[in-house]
Image 1 (spheres, rainbow, N blue to C red):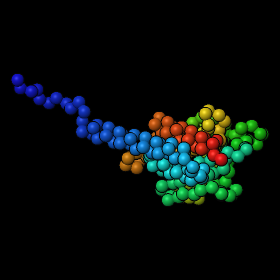
Image 2: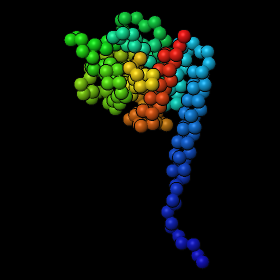
Image 3: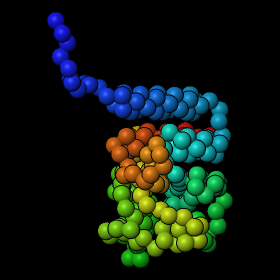
Image 4: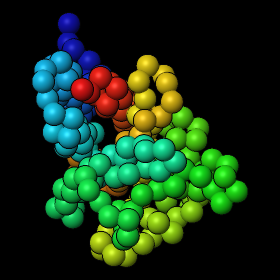
Length: 212
């Protein structure tokens, strides 16, 4: 019997290639997360683990930047800031002036502030996904604008996750900035990004809660 002609491929080479890339990316994420989990069980200094988690986040999430804030009373203080584009890796001891100044968690009337993305993340104790920072409803984008102007950066999107321990009150905030695809184009943050941010934020919550 002669085989019929012109039967379309059920799985094209492009699909196979994309599936293979997705599998490799997932495998790399699992490897990184396993390594981080193992490291948490060892005698690592908290600041060293903070840097390691932020660095891993940029690599396995495919984002251009990642920032970590830690809560101190009614303020969020930067702990680590990393940007691939800027070649930037800054840790701790930020001053009260400039683009890395602390973020207030209270509005002028004493109520929880929801103007900054990081502050709203704490107020709502939930993930906030901003796909386009130029169209921020009910957010104060001036802080982002000042950072971009001073640093020569172009913030497009922000994914902000609360750092908690076992669902408690926020201890800080982990933020991804500018998701990119395999060829470097800006893309919206996906559900996978959200899950990864939650996982890494949970690790940080454990680290800060159990540190000596």
